[in-house]
Each structure stands twice: as structure tokens, then as C-alpha cells.
Length: 279
Ligand SMILES: [Zn+2]
Ligand SMILES: [Zn+2]
Image 1 (cartoon, rainbow, N blue to C red):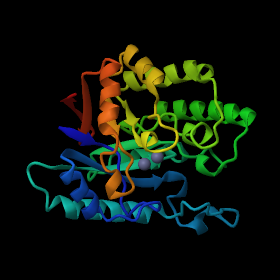
Image 2 (cartoon, helix red, strand yellow):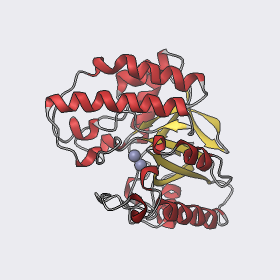
Image 3 (spheres, protein in one colour):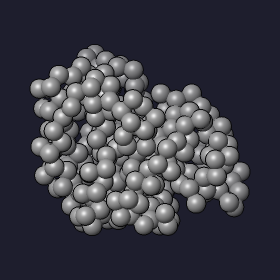
Image 4 (cartoon, helix red, strand yellow):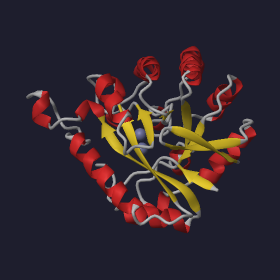
């Protein structure tokens, strides 16, 4: 049984595909448990005017409250057409939950939600890592701040699974070819893992990087192995598809990597509870 626990629809600003088309692609690819996790960037929950004159739109938009309402509405409508052999999981990719922990908790408790993926796409006061220019020096500095912030998010805990643990590497290593000694961040990452494991939270193996020039998943093998060695059990697989043709993308490669690191199961979430599936 294939699971894809990280996908988007047109309710996300960087995706044009209707939910029905994404679900059709999932069914065609034999995916049985399919989570829709549209973007909610908590640092832009309100309309732009709320943030004052200085708030600039870097392309990710504002008013995620309205996007979230739309995403929930379309998932409920699609669920009404659900058949027994396909489980549609109502999720969200909650970006920057540290921007408003009380609101993050409120969203986590929303009864329509099965699954909250937490992510960190930008640091406070910065643009999305996608938009930054990197040098050897600033890359390491940004990563240090990134992992410290991620630890902060892990301690707040208003989510089920931490998405793409090494997100900035997509651009630093994958796009700009800057190689970074990840050993420098190992202690902080281990602390993130310890926090997640103690709180019953998990990580995802995000396979989007396999489809890009980066060629690696997030986290990459060494860090996935560290999670396993520390006792991590909750692992979801996610394609991070923004187009029907990417649904389920490289999940089998991800599953094979998880197996080689010693995982025997992956999971999906219903009502914030992990359900395990044998690999
Ligand atoms: Zn993301
Ligand atoms: Zn995503």
C-alpha cells in the first residue's frame, strides 16, 4: 500500500492543479492513502494590510486564512465522493508555526484536520530560502539559524510531522552548488530528533529532491539513519507534488532508502494518530 503524505492543490499559491485531478492521479498510481497538505504560511495568515506598509509580497501571497478555508472546504467535498479503497487525508503544510504559536495550536485542533506537517520556509524577517542568494559563509550561518528555529518549532509541538528537515539545501546545494559540512549541525539536529521522539512526533522523508538537480531526498541518508538510530519510528513519505504527474514521485526510491536505514514501516495520520504500514 503506497502512501503519499505531502501534496498540494490549487489552494496553494504555487500550484494550479485542482484537487480532483491530483486525486485521480493518486488513484491511477495505486496510492491508497493520500494526504492533501496545502500551504498555510502562518506568518501571512492575515490580509497584507494587517502587516502594515512595510510588508512586501515576495510571491507567496497573504491571507492564508482564506486559503485554508478553501482547502478545507474542497477536501470535505472530495471526501464525500471517496470510495472504500482510497483514504483521503485532510492535512495542511503549516509553515512558520513559530510566527504565532497560539494560532498554530488552534489550527492543530481544527476538527476537520487529520494531519499537520510543520515546515520552515523562511526565517523571521527574511524571504523564503528559495529567494535568497547564497555564499559559503552566509549558507552556514543561515543553516545554523534555521536549525535553531526548527528546534524551537519542535519544542512548541503543534504539528504531527516535521516536513523536509533540510529544506534550505534544495537551494544551497541543489541549485547553487555550495557544499556544506552538515556535521556542524548534527548536535542541533539530534536535539530536534530527541524532542520529536519524546513528544510522539515524526519526520517525513520528502522525495521532491530526487526529481530535481539536487538528486537527494530531505533529509538525506545520513540524517535519516541518525533518526532511526536514535529510536525514531514515525516516518511519513511525501512527494511534495504540485502537479498530477509528480504525485507519488520517487516514493518507491524513498521507501527503499528507508528500508536500507532499518525502517520496517512508514505511517500516515488520521485524526493526528499514526497508522503504520509495512514497507
Ligand atoms: Zn514545504
Ligand atoms: Zn509542500
